[in-house]
Image (spheres, rainbow, N blue to C red):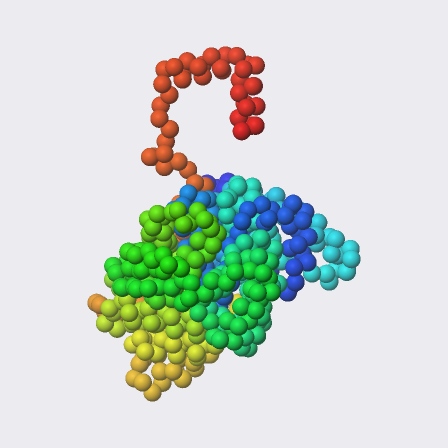
Length: 494
């Protein structure tokens, strides 16, 4: 990344974070006004809208990969990020570049300030201003429309009905398994579901994962009220068969009467296989009749190219270090089951650090069957659970089992300790929070080692040299100023 691009990005990000990344206002007033000033860019392309408690980001990336395999340019919007805010805005699997991020911010931020000033004029200095998430969402919607993309795939930030992403068209809605997570959304899955079904738009095609009976009933009722079509896991789409394979798993997926075999998914666990089935259904709903004519290899190529950072991701060898962003009991149980199935570790050293508002003891309990040694620490976040709370929860789970529980004052120390404990054939799992996983990924796979700039032509895509006739025509054109201007105008018209 050049110094100029770095400075522009850091300036834009500083201005964005000044709006308070953790600040939420549960209504759509500001994002609605901001999008209106932008000309409602979120309506310029069809969109897939994904909610649920876990697996949202994986489904978004899978749908995006399937679109790419079919020749469609997909813009993906996810949250939160692991290492850089640029991860949240992506096209064709690549994060937005630093220059583009700064440019898009500078185009949208002045309109956010207009919205702020109007709110202050109406309600005084205590008026709610555009939030960090609202501005970032508008940036993504604007960038996708400006490129333009063929489809936008959006992950809900929190909930559904009042989430800033809920202004998208939502031609297809995906509801992954709904459980309890954020306290703001409710204390039971049924209460949480009432908020999440708010993403279902009139006439939408809706795909749902396995749900508790009372949750499924709410979804079915919402789909019927919207005049939509409901595709359910188990009835309309499912994983017919799966087997552990090198680097992931081999799947057979059914959608209606069509079965697609030999799908190599480079992700681990039954939960990711089911996410792949949901993504396939969403992609089929989006492409409609075109999907029926597609070769099965489109699906194989798309799902075979999926990359999801921080979800049972191997980031280091000797010892093998695996990162998983499980931050609630449901996600932790899925990760633990996948570890047990897919990794043949002799012993597993667990490094855990959670946020204060999470059910820490339940998260750690999910890993009790697979952990042989435990290191707890404090997550690198102002919202982190205290080291004392992490230790108390760990002792409540493992205190009488003979499993050693140790503490480390920070994540770096915890990782050093875990690596020193692990022996040949052992593994290290880092989990408990996306903040924890992001910081660990910075240590093992820093973004500076990855491509940071905009997408450029690959060597195989470089144009062939001009032939002599073409070169002569170009030389003549450059000598004739009027003809050159006409050619430029033709290009602009195109």
